[in-house]
Length: 455
Image (cartoon, rainbow, N blue to C red; front, side):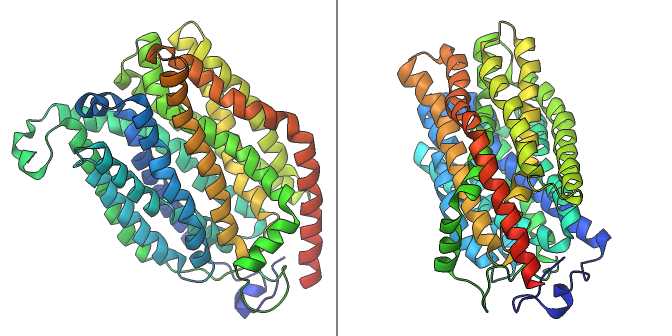
């Protein structure tokens, strides 16, 4: 049941006046499409490692910095003020501006001629993409009753696997198309190489999505009032609330951060399969793209459906249980597959990792929202994404690169770097799961009791 608060309109507070379901699902579909494009735009660099390294003379460490910190620092830190805006201003407008920014920045990456210029473009992509999830997830939560939220968020979360899958396929197709062209006519515009045109062609369609997002209606805010008091809480109240119950929130973020570390190491998959088993990047991109498009959405939506079933049966830690199973699937398979003797056995095992990633990613936000008051949802979501993104992007791609360049000092040893990163980060969290689950379950019970008192 939804609660009354002066932050929520009287019509929304009765818990009955949700948007028309067809329109609500249209908005989810649009947000999911935008999320897909955001993932393609952040992933494209990993698929162009070979030509970019060759043309710019970059090392694996520099590529790792472009994949990780260049994007992550501003993607993560800008999320906090943007989360504050999401709790107070039009989330629709914030997303529209962000989409336009990162799309133009992606296109500008194709015009970069130095490491510094490409680094700056990646920073701009990070700033733009930081607008999306805090606002999008807050909007989705306000458009659906609780028993449908996990499924709606799961649909949105399919963008990770769909974006990765279509990214492999689209980038391969666009790169092949660019390779077939005589680019001499475009040289005057700074487009001299196929990878230059690839960035431009992938970036510009996002401007149209920004225009469509600007036409969406802002939903009324819900689930407010559990913190007590009138008016919207500020950052001091938000951090005080989180500080008093830090372990349940950290429990969710820690498990999901293992997922992001594992997922972002996949940016090195094309290089891994090329260096270790001799697979061409275009071949790997096509078959991995198809696999992701099948396994990712199925796994994400099944996990979301199961989370909603748990919710309807009043199982407080249902989402946490799904995350735990996903963690047990993901970590061992991610550490194992780079060490296998053949490319095909490694590829098949890597898809088990994909299933685990999908399970965790689909229910992380529903698990978070189950203990988060509506009036601070944007800021908490921003902090959550800051933590998991910083972990994923600072430990994942750079960790693999640093181990390969500095510890093994041989790019042919990338398989061992790929195995070590998820193992070293994931195994301690697996050992802590019983403690994390107990803390989370207690907080869900407390939060539901607090909401019931404000009805």
